[in-house]
Length: 406
Image (cartoon, helix red, strand yellow):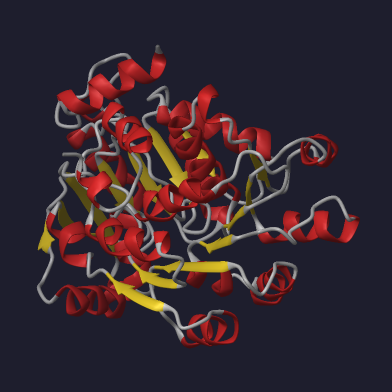
C-alpha cells in the first residue's frame, strides 16, 4: 500500500506522487501531514531538502473545494525563486481533472496580468509578502475565505525584514484559518509570531543536519584573497561539476566573479536580487536544464532552491554562521545522492572556519590545490560540450531530466 495513503492522503494524490517516483514519505511528511489533515496548526522545524514542501502542499490540496470560487489556500515565501519553485512543484501534481487553479504572485512580474488572473477562479495563491500586500492595498485580492495559511522559510522571511508585512497579511485572513509555519530555525521573533497568531500549534522538529552533512563530502581549500579565484578555477577544472553553485556574500561580488569567470570561458551565469524577474527565470531555467554548468549566487537569492543534479557547492566567500553553511551545502547531496562542498578560506577567515568545524563536531578535510598558471594548457577550462567526468549525474537524475523534457 502507498505509504502516503496510510498518512491520510487520497489515492488520487498518492498515485500522482507514485508517477513522480515518490512512494515513501520523509520524516517531516510523516509527522506533519496527519496533523495538518486533522486541522491542527503546525510549527515545523526542518531544513530545506527534507521534503517539507509536499508536507504542506498535500494537506492543502486535500482541503480545496473546487466548487468554491475563492482563495482557500495561501502560501507566503520570502523570495521569488522559492515562490516559483513551490508553484512548479504544485503544477507537477495538478492535472486538468483536478480543476484546482493556482496563481504565483511576486514582484517583477506584470501586476496587471496578476490582477486579471485574480478576477478569475483562483483556489491557491503562492506569494511574496511585498507583492501580496500590493494586491491587498489595491483591493485586487480577497483573503477572507482562506482556510489554510502556510508561512514557508519563516526565519528567512523575518531575517530580511518582512515581519510587519507578514503580520499585515495574517490580519487579512480569517481567525478561523489553519496556520502552518515551516522554518529551518526557531529564533525568538519566529516563536513570538507563532505565539501571537497560531492556536495551540503542534510542534514537529526534524533534526536533518546529520543527513545533509553526511551526504556531502566537505573540503577546505586554504588560500589567500589574492589567489582565491585561481584556486577556485583549479578546483572546478579538477572536479568538473555537472551542476555547481558558487556562493558569494554580496551582489557586487557575485557579478564581479561571474564576469571574470565568463571571460575565462566558463559556462556560468549569476543570480541575485538586482536582476529583473525575467532574467532570473531565464537563468534558473537554463541551470535546471543543465544548459549552464555553474551558477554564482548570493545566499538570499538561492534560499530554498531545490535543483536536481547539483553535484558541487563552492563557498567562494566563507559563510559567517552555521545556518548559512548548512543551507549552502544543502544545495547538493539531496534525495540520497552524493555531493561535494569546497570552502575557500584565507587566514582572516580562521574564526569562521573554527565556528563551522565546531558546529559540525569535527574538522573538515584540507585539500591542497596545485595552483598552475591560468594561461597554461594544463589549466585551461575544458570545452562546455565535453562531458564532465566526476560530476556525472546519476542514472536516476538522467532519467528524470529526459522525462521532464518530453
